[in-house]
Image (cartoon, rainbow, N blue to C red; front, side, top):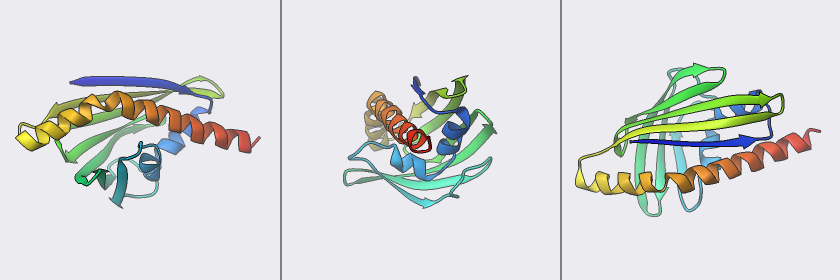
Length: 152
């Protein structure tokens, strides 16, 4: 399965890439009522780093281990090593439109687990990706554009 979402933020490429390289950004742009609890990850993610976290979907804990891969100045990949999917690969790409505007492109490739419970959870998560990424786009714009206005 493949999913793609894109949005534009009024912030320079360097600020957008730096924001997304922070492990704390994941929790900051995840919509309520989902809570992200990071167990272990460096503050700034780099090639080969592991991010160990739990996504709480209400009372249901979804433990996840991801590795950061293919890091470039304009992109990176987080690949699930352990979690609810058989495969989950999330490509983050940042394309500058000009010096102050960047398009963020999220591409997800996934395979839902065959285990009955994780299959239900995975399909529920997959079907909610449009809501998740719409919120992430809104929250990213809110955080980065507010920060840019405060520095002017």
